[in-house]
Length: 425
Length: 146
Ligand SMILES: Cc1ncc(COP(=O)(O)O)c(C=O)c1O
Image (cartoon, rainbow over all chains, first blue to last red; front, side):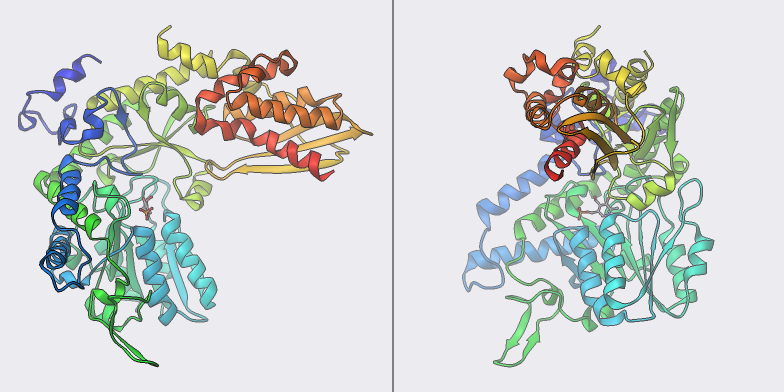
């Protein structure tokens, strides 16, 4: 493993063939937590990403120079906070290809975004006899939110099944669509398998066969792939800032203006009103109508810094980097006795490798790897309906991001070999 | 053996791996007087514990379910340790086992725990304590409910 040290210094990524053992795309030094612990092998970026120094600096800078309650004060500091918030929205919107930045709502994360769409659009438009469609690979944030909305509104809840290699079965999905379909929700990328779904193709299929809204859970999309909302064909797209290298508690919901304008508010309070009468209240314009109360300006600024950081790397380079690591990991892990890798081929994934080892529980694998400084996730990945269809209670999952490199893959593989030896003995 | 292998050995002792590979008292218990189920929502592991009493004394205990080596070995050892104990003794054992896996030095030195002491290494792995106590939590319910 001593060779890994030299990989971090000096060499120019551009000189390395794309599919050779990958160097980190962004140096570990740019991430204070990783820089402080050179031995740490953090392979749980799909759960949350480590934060670039640029993000931490932006947070500090905002609180040290511009902190005030925005939209309220008639003094310059409050205007600075308002400007910072407005500017953050514009930068995040640009990063995800949304031209009309007022259609980007800041929320706490994907979970809150999904609850907003269900609680506002869903409550207003879904009724008895209607149908709501999700997929077998949805995260509980999407699956449970729409399941409960369907139950509450007396609608049918339908689940599009997967192909054996872990992609959405488009024929089965098509067979579920019809005039009663009101909502089709699915992940851009599966957090449990890494499968990248063809969003544009699915959206076109939905349009062809129904008037349903297309709701995309982009929690694993924005951190790993180029996203251009205006050309995706989706009506709503949600993501979490903390998986993009931004602060926890930040995130955004993107929506089409016509839908957002027609939707009732979801939460009430300050900022979201225009006029408050004794009996009636009117609503503020977008985006404020959906941002009740003092906004989370600091974290919006941090999220914008994370988007700038990724834009600097280039999202095409990010996904190419992750795929090179995944291909290397699938090959290396696949050669270990008893290991089964779940999900599709490397070129149809983001940087996720979900796997099982015969006779060794994922929890035991995670503990054995943890002892070697390798952090992986073991569990159902908030996707119990998917685990049932894979026929396992849980899987182990390694996930890569911009700071991951070949040494991570090797440490993972060596840890698994040690687990194999321990349990075979 | 590297340092890290030595540390692993502290949790994955041969005795634990042996109970995992060849669980004792596994399967349904005909004529059980009490039954309790536990699930670890994090990993979907599940344990069903069934106990038969002769008056105040445990005649037999069996378990079923699936899970990691720690939860399975712990359940297997529990069923062995329980046989022949009174309710009061079983309750004391639940408390002492909990102390053991939470790192209590007194419990680690308690020879009355017998083979169960092999699980003391779990104390160093907070994320795994729940695995070790799954079956014991079911036993606690059995003792309270009956
Ligand atoms: C695909 C997917 N959807 C939704 C979520 C929920 O995101 P959050 O917990 O940040 O709201 C996650 C993260 O765990 C995810 O991976």
